[in-house]
Amino acid sequence: MSTKKVTKKELLVTAKELSLKSAAKLSKNDLIHAIQIAEGNVDCFGRIENCDVTPCLYRAECQS
Image 1 (cartoon, rainbow, N blue to C red):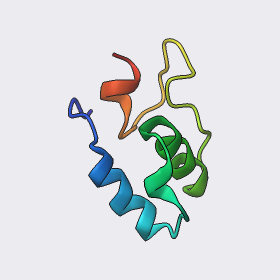
Image 2: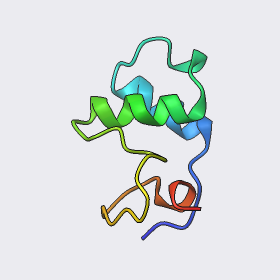
Image 3: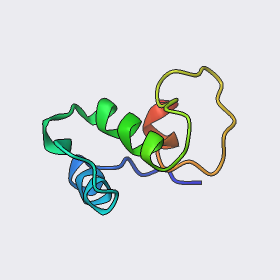
Image 4: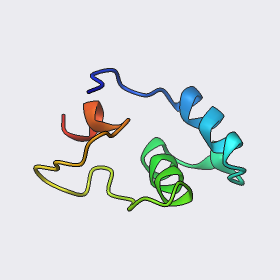
């Protein structure tokens, strides 16, 4: 389980790999949501209390 927070720079690299448009203009939370959707996941970042979804790259800051 990751305890390291993901940087916006890292998110922008992932967004580019997923061909997300205008990613740099998004807030970090919105960028994470867009990546989650593009990967076929629910855009749950920061929206679920007591989340038990694993593995999750964003758990360190989502549940903090």
